[in-house]
Image: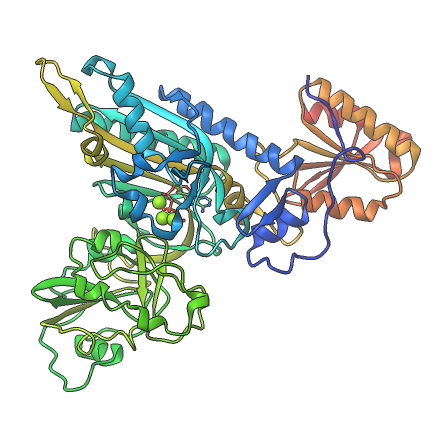
Length: 563
Ligand code: ATP
Ligand code: MG
Ligand code: MG
Ligand code: MG
């Protein structure tokens, strides 16, 4: 049976002040409440309470994955380069990949995601259509050398992900595996108590076709999405411009050649096209060498190059040259090669001069347009449109004004298709006795990120405030007084524990009731039980962490209430 967790024996040190480097609520609170400790930039140690929360999330994820018939495996994080060479991702990932060598000089990497390895395993293990469909998953450590590992465990360079992969012989099969995941994810996020939206997403570096993200609305989120209040339309703004705004520009203004002797500024362009110059996502769509390309314009939003890749000519990629970053080597990580987006360059400092490109991750670029200017740095055949997504824009489905919000990406599901199967020639023997190329899906949940997302969505000014299933305990018992109170607190704790209630009891000697109350609110267990003033009469106080509602009850009543 589980033990009562005694704070007198728990390795926990709560902090009154926010850590100096913390920008987001979850980062501040998880550190202050003693759940996690920073080991290096983007690398976190999980302390006893944090580990419990992480385990609780893992448990929910595992149950729901098992429920759709997915089989759990555990693959290595240390992976051979050859597998990722087969798909080109060893290079494609650019600086995001942790690369290393063994003592013989052979190349390895730390897995950022495992499509390649799963494909190889299934090629080994499955030979007939009768072996499929199969869904495999793992809950495992991933490594990505994120350019901006801010925001605590929200964006780690080492983090926990549940990743699963489906293998089918037909498109219908893939769609069914995808739907199974979609339904499982809804259950998972509901059980976790995470408010979430399912939005259309661009597939980015993964390639493939259908893709949706599970976003948890929160101001600390790094994604922006639009949501229609009247119908089911919702999309990441990374995806919305391609969905909602026709390239002919009719949504926002006339399409004409803009013939200006000087290089047009975005303001000139915006005025020309009849759109406001200030907006959330601004992609300038232009034709270069007869091809439509999108160029980011001033602002801090991201343009997904993975999606744009098909339209992107080298001319645009070449805009980001070494010269643009002259003297800013400290800010530069990697580069964009002249042949296309082979490597990425990242400028960490938002104060970097306008005119440089700001690339985040392997597949996103945001170009600050004054150095890098259409018309001066490359020839423009025709200005097509400025794609703008703004609060109140008409929903592409029903025309109602769209809402715009920030959110945290907590899950992502992809129909990959045959891209990876092609790379490894993953075939099985079909019903007709001929080889059939397998089609795949890949599905991720940010398990450690979910801890941060939950903290962001549920915390208040006093501290963390966990949903019941996720909290490190069900009840936080506080001994507010001397020996009598401690004795009662421990007794109640044992009784609750015997009834299967998970208990954290603050039995620390020499710690004032005030400090214990503050800590209890910071730690965020849903119910607080106080053995205080009226302990001699056998009366305790029950307090709801979220609402602050309190009630005095006898010990027997309190136990009956909580079991
Ligand atoms: P992001 O856009 O935030 O960088 P991503 O699109 O690169 O995430 P995916 O490749 O879709 O991430 O990975 C699946 C899931 O893993 C994501 O939906 C997210 O919840 C989680 N995840 C991705 N990167 C990180 C990270 N650096 N730290 C923690 N969780 C992450
Ligand atoms: Mg990423
Ligand atoms: Mg993403
Ligand atoms: Mg994603």
